[in-house]
Image (cartoon, rainbow, N blue to C red):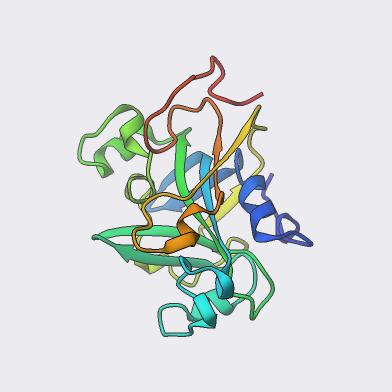
Length: 204
């Protein structure tokens, strides 16, 4: 069943980041239906968050989408990688959640091809890896989760959610240390070193 706008209603961005764990991310492109479970997210808190592109309500051509309503899709490039973000709040409040890692469910052969022959956890255990695997691109910038070929569905419930500081944020002072990265405990697809893997990959 597709998830609706209710996943964002009456929630903070931090709550959304946690609630997205275990949701099924779907991208229907060129006859291939890519499906994966979200296993890692990061929250970005807009105006007061030095690590957010919209810090101090910075409004540029690139960040304009962040000022739209929850469910809008914000894509940006970093080190030649494309990263996937969902806007989380009402229009005018530029906060978002970065999707950092997913566990593939379908179209695994296509994902391996998209990743240049990579296999195993390396297919999608990072924000740039997952977008390449699932065939996301900058052309997806500005779409929404409710009326496009990208959407969320009910997935699985994590046994444990672990909060850590965000990673990959050089020179962001205190913002780097905020515990705004959330992972499914025990899942092998989370980025970085994986410890204490669970038999059910962290899901009920």
